[in-house]
Length: 196
Image (cartoon, rainbow, N blue to C red; front, side):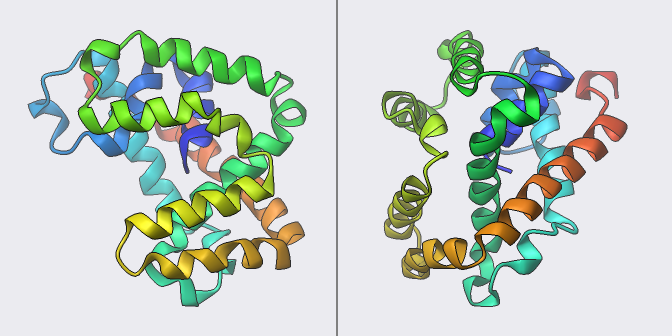
C-alpha cells in the first residue's frame, strides 16, 4: 500500500503513528537500534506490518500482468491509492482534501527528524498535491512515467496506464477489496512496537 493507504490505517489505528507509517520506506534497520521517538517506531512497525500483509496474498497483484514482474507490488500500491482517492468520501465519510491536510499537519510535527530523501519526496508531494491528484487516472500515468525514469529496467512502467484502463473495473473492485483485507488484518493483529 502506498501513502494514502498507509495514512488511512494510521488514522484508524493511532494518529501518532502517522509519521513513521508514512515514512516507513525511508528508515532501514532494526527498530530497537533506531534513535527515534517511540511513536515514530510504532509507526515504522505499523508500516512494516502493513507491507508484510500486503505482500502476502495480495488479490490485486495477482491480476496485474506478469510482464510487470518485480514492479507488480509497486503498481498495486499506486493503483490502490488511486481508487482510495477516488472513493475516499464514500468509503470513509470524510473529505479527501481535509484528510490530506490532516496528514500534512501530522507529518509537519516531525520536520526536525525528516531524512534527506524524505524531505525531497515530501516537498514534491505537498507542493504538487500528489495525494489528491491520485484521483485522476492521467496522473497515475504521469506517476509511472516518472518512476520509470528513476529505476533500472523501469521502461516497462510506461505500459501500466494501458493495463489500468483495460482492467479498470476489475482493478477498482480488487483495489478496494485489497485495502479492506489488509486493514482488517492490521486491526486484528497490530500491537505497538513499544508494547513488545
